[in-house]
Length: 114
Length: 111
Image (cartoon, rainbow over all chains, first blue to last red):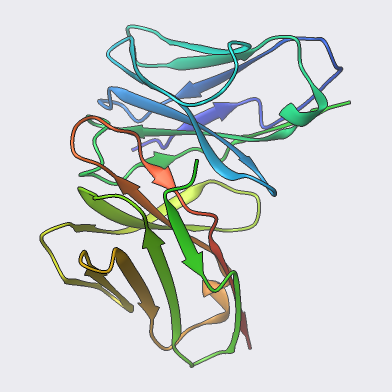
């Protein structure tokens, strides 16, 4: 079966711009979680969507937002980009989004803000 | 914020040796998972252990969990160069709480 697909793989943006990242989960998975990974902070939880509803949210400013569509595909948006937003953004899909199952991760989107 | 803390931060061993990584966490958990990440790529799920389990095996992997000490260990036996990667533990609490990751152990297996 197809894995988790994240697009684009790489992105270079300028400070102040906005960006939208996309994640297509494994067919049948209803939960999509987003993480930001940086060398200094490690993997930080952004938010989780389940059946089109945001179920959990991490400690990130309101510039970070997301949504999930009826086909479970998810997008995250970062507005007014800052240099510190440069990171690898990972999405993970799972059946129910509980910790009682392994998550399947995409390959990530590498965002560079200049 | 990180729930788990892996130890050591980096580990370098010879091929064929065993590698042991430890994870400590702060609050009560429901499950603990281990993931592997090859350089700059997505994470791959390795093994899940529930809070009422003490030990689990999967191929060359052995995971233990000590909830009284709030710690877990991952043992990779007979390591191979292909095991070179970063290893992360991740925990969740009871209820629909997100999976929270530690900062990882970087393992280098030298052929």
